Image (cartoon, rainbow, N blue to C red; front, top):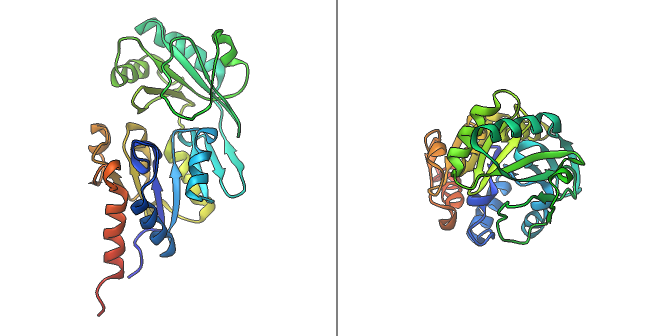
Length: 273
């Protein structure tokens, strides 16, 4: 037997990365064994390229990466942006006004397009600690001065799920809204998802959805699971993702990706006939 999948798609935060933002030796070895068996590994993350590149460098990763919730397909080896989809800023502004009309004032941040696009952070927006580049701005108008991939929103009282639900109801078909992680609710171009970016990258690799196993932990991974043949949720995953997963593995802290890949490798090598 050969390895049953030609493509292994992994989310980053809460999935491939542990809480200290590193990838374990065991998971690195499992991914290396899978690629040696002929499968491709592709990282599919909500992070834009500038917030992903240092992790790719640490992994020695030179393949395609889907960033920005599917907006960007990035070639890590060539350090080149192959595709990039931007958010219509007029539509985004209209969507935000509709959300604020329902739930009151929001704190906002925005991810600028491009290989070096900064994340602009407005007043009151809580940024997660880490080495990621962020530019604090006092005038929210600065956020709209250049092309954006997405806008982040936070509410002083509503939790992430409640904010995402209220925002979705308010915006109708103007834009998409996803909950991508703790404190991370995003406004995206309508129809954009990790699945759209992954399908573009897979096409470049000559791989089909039926050849793909995907790993994730948050509701923004639901379209990727729907697109792939087999979706694996981490033990620490959001209940909405677990509900649509084909399988639940161990947590990101406990090498959940490696657990599944090692089993598949063992089965595909099989006992000698």
